Image (tube, rainbow, N blue to C red):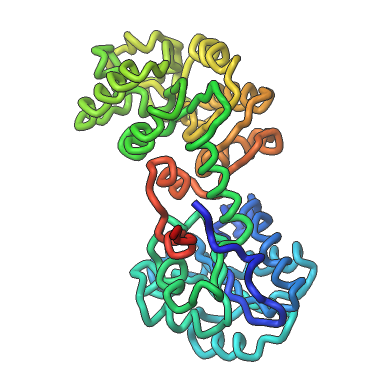
Length: 399
């Protein structure tokens, strides 16, 4: 998949609208706790500034549902971008209101304007054509560098692209990198290729698992989703999370893996607790006989040893989804140990955004990974074999 390239645009001295993904986590005091998504956008922003462009930045933050909600204001984001760019960042008071439009019109070369939260506009998530048109009127060129929302057909992501021809729109450096990395991973990985798939539910990963099966050599399952597979095998899983309506799908995936010669691994033991709480009593139990009323909340030490052994010879690792409830220290050990092992390996290691990216950053091994995606949902849809709405209109059509 080849995308329209920012380097092929004649940007010199022009006005550019860059759709970024500044949907960053905040602590209870409104401070940004992880600015990786902001730092990831700097290459594209600086490239435009080096071309003497005036730059309009657009992003969402959280889910204000079309309302102006103070805690979702981009004021902290504007401060952080200003600090990282080492130049003033003008913040508009609205998205396409009088303030934003007048500031965009008055923007001079080398100046940066950040619009307020795009999702303050009700039409953003509805892909409203009028909103797309107003956003497009602010600039001569459109650049999408927001991989994390490119699976959404929103006004600033998909709708706006229809107001620019192929000589006036392109993918930014981050979006290019994400698409190329996942493309290579799916089409031409260095083998053996293992996928570690975790998280709470099978339903969110079902299509990705089906699409991965013909492409990988090994699949290692963890997290709450493992119990749907274990129940399908007839094991006692106690009160663990299970999706009964997906038992047949789980069986189909395991049958398909066997047919394709893909090694399919499930936890052999778990850390179980009587209740979902930090102060709960825990015990390690076989994954085949979790006591009634108890729930598995992390993979156990035998599974950690097994998974390390299985990963010992692989050359490419894709990891999407934690092995347990990593937000609670008591149930984070399995995820942490696998993260350290993957980080220390010589394999190409790709972390599929979302909770897994948060996990590796939290324990300080993010710099050891080959690539960390900035989009959990977007990376999953790529793995499902889908063409993302925000990418479709930036693709170079083959003759």
